[in-house]
Length: 224
Ligand SMILES: Nc1ncnc2c1ncn2[C@@H]1O[C@H](COP(=O)(O)OP(=O)(O)OP(=O)(O)O)[C@@H](O)[C@H]1O
Ligand SMILES: [Mg+2]
Image 1 (cartoon, rainbow, N blue to C red):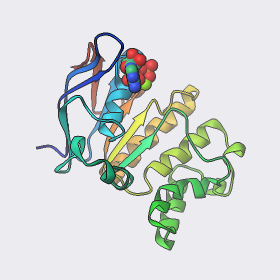
Image 2 (image 1 turned 135 degrees about the vertical axis):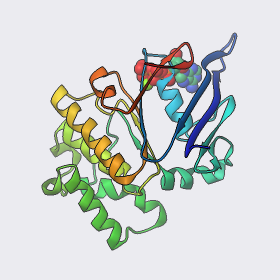
Image 3 (image 1 turned 60 degrees about the vertical axis):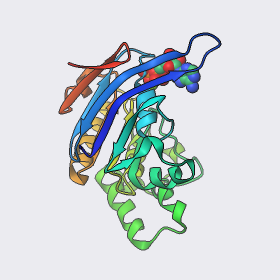
């Protein structure tokens, strides 16, 4: 079995009438160090798939396995710490806390277990350096540009050294130059940390840079 396996994923949402079937038998296998771009029209279920992969929601049927753990059936109580330790998220909007500095925002995922260690502090600084923001670590989000905020979000997603990195249109709110930078950054950091990266994007330009691309169409992944 691969490090990340999604097997025959079906996701339906309840409506007043017939349930809405958004994913209709999605299959993916990825090993550590591999990356995948997901493209597809608005409403096709791309975010839904990322949510299931990130244990933010559960499939109607099918299973998702990460490094031997059946994540789609983990008990509710185990989800927050599992997510915090194994999965990194980058969203279209950065979701930084406005009252925390860049450095503190990067350290946020480490606080679930109490105070950040000196080692985590060093790692946060190193990540800020890797995303080109060493000299912005004490800035509040309001005094960072859009691209810089998104780079902080990328650094934050990696602070706990996740196995699985999930990005949902990480460059969607940026101009092309900054979008390209964020894309390269994600791929570079993913390779360096031997993580699995799954990235949803509307940008064909960004998708092309990934080793694998799939299109979500009528509830299924179609290889481009
Ligand atoms: N909790 C929910 N209840 C009912 N329907 C939902 C729910 N979440 C998503 N949907 C529906 O599922 C479909 C897929 O949504 P999703 O957010 O996954 O699309 P997407 O491919 O990410 O689109 P976009 O490119 O616009 O972000 C949409 O039609 C949406 O309305
Ligand atoms: Mg979406």
